Image (cartoon, rainbow, N blue to C red):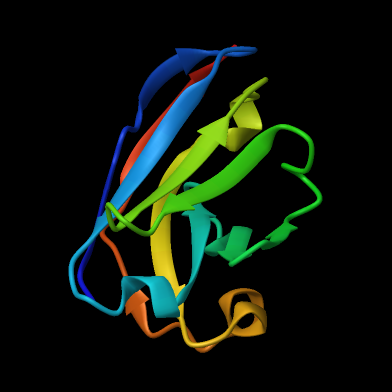
Length: 120
């Protein structure tokens, strides 16, 4: 599976942004998918995970971000609302064999990052 993230950009605090991740390969629907982010000078951190109807979110984004997917189109999305300056990071999409492994690892596939900058 190859993953290509897009949709990042500059947005003011309180604004919204939707990230997309295009996946190649026929087995996309079989993978649990997730989003991670890495802020400058910090380690990469888990943001959200999705497998079938199960979702998991980091406490810092719960209630503001929504992860979704379109298996027919091989697409993964992250709708980000009420953005804060601390959401500024490079965001990565990822695929794992099982739902629990998205947060805990190992990750099977990583996409390249897309940069999100939230101005105050």
